[in-house]
Image 1: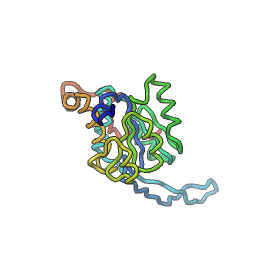
Image 2: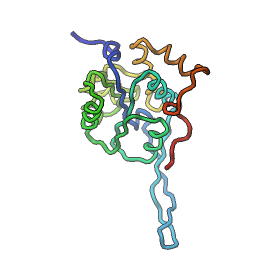
Image 3: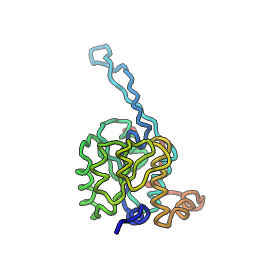
Image 4: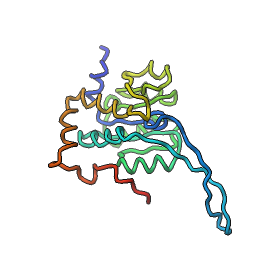
Length: 205
């Protein structure tokens, strides 16, 4: 029996995301910045910038309210990603990962869950091994065509333009809890505890 996208989404307990092209538009801005060389002078170091979408940020709060766990798995190593992960209070953060099933297997063992309870959101061929294994494979609207072809669901929005939010809302809707999760998020009488509240600027330490 072939499961529909909604059938697959109903089982999800953990949602994992690639970063570049999924939580960003895929552009990587690199600038030289002067850094003290310890000898009274300066040397040039590379500083990397990325842009994130606030709608996706809200999606991570919705996941927490709904009891779902979230994380990122990315090949690049970037302090901007580490800062964003701290700001979003992600459950799982894996950088420098060329083979993404390795951290997924670690998450499965840690959480005691199966592949059918994991969703993965990707946009490029490096994401295919994970997308082929997890229970719910999601491609962004800007994903490579061969990635879209292997996805169970393609978001309406592109990476960096709300694709993460599309993925989360689809899953919560399939689980029948989207409306109540949103109402809990906006309820003044039910403020988010510090462990769930994001958007405070992140921890720079």
